Length: 277
Image 1 (tube, rainbow, N blue to C red):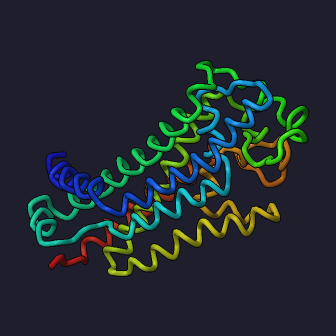
Image 2 (cartoon, helix red, strand yellow):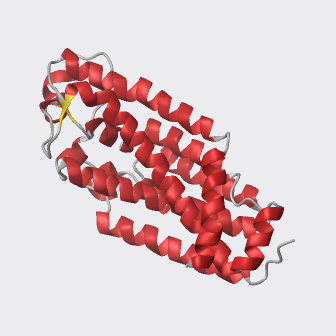
């Protein structure tokens, strides 16, 4: 563990100090302004306060915002791993496996921080017109039947396949964990191909996994479940509307964890052949 922390500490410092983080802040700002603010304004218009987590749940289950959120993350992954002279010295001290798991833990913490930053922004934006409680708001429950025709923009609401199957707290927990597993897997893919000096392949694969879902999701084709990104969207895991193309939540967890284990195994195997210089 000491060897892992030897890699983790300077790595996190460099990651959080990276100027490219401005891109992520701009992306979160756009999501808050274009999505969260509009949803709150709509709730005010119909006189129905929102649950404190509902704007965040909306973002986690909205294709448009998730794509923007993850594309920004892919751009940040281009800087990982950093193999400057200082890093090479740490690699020789920590060993190859210590370096790899240090980078993996760094990716995990960085991904979680990115998600939590979005959550905090959503909660702050809705704070003045929200309540704390594990109960869905009337705005969410009756949106389709009572408010959709009244409001000019019907893209800022929570999918019925979320609120019909989960409580708000369950939706937050599952949404965060699934998205985190997807992001860590994307990071592990980047590490694997970086070890092979083919980082561009990792970038292309991560981008394709996002676009792949968008293409197949329009036609509700089962092949979309090959992409980890699809499993990160809670709204697709139920049978209320899309019975024939849905998968269970447990399957998505198993799929993402199994892929992560496979990628870690492949990375460690490839790492044995890697010479750092």
